[in-house]
Length: 161
Image (cartoon, rainbow, N blue to C red; front, side):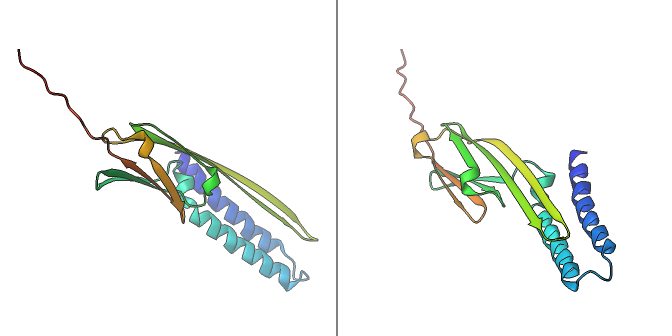
């Protein structure tokens, strides 16, 4: 139900832009009409790029095992590296991010200022324990990659009495 409201809000924002374009009078400069159209397409593109993340506050995560390591990848488009926080231990990682975006636009006929804020928080458990000191992370092109070395399971010998 919550995701449906967010979806409706996105289309409501686009609808408001179209209505604003219809209110322009013929005496308005063609530049204003073109500017409104550009704004509408830019807004739609921005909303479209973040559409999945706005509908689902969590971000998609994959965990794979490669050569004695667990590799966690998280798709986080539109989030800056500085906005991501990672806490890790030998059982898993907690990934959180807080992203804010502000648009400010002004000309002699109107003033527009919009702010949006998104918060993400997700805990991922490793299939088995890892060496907490070996955990490393990198972020490139909207994809967070966390690599953790599996801990060697050392059993102990049991003497039979």
